[in-house]
Length: 74
View (spheres, one colour):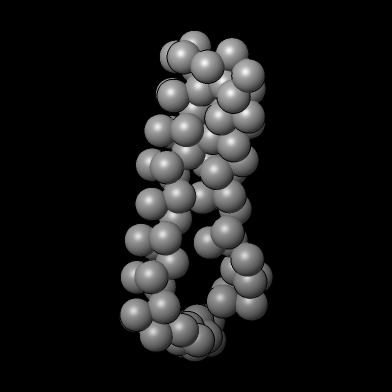
């Protein structure tokens, strides 16, 4: 028989930290969608491009921020 063993996962973060990261990313994602939608609606021609770019950046950060330190969490 094989002596294969799986190393136990080390829990590096508490549940509250993981929950806060999830809620923060969700809020940032929804805010980015709102910014993108309000910028694409065409209400203010001088402000709309900034709202669209801000929405794209907010949605990108919502996906990227939880990944900081992911290689350490394993």
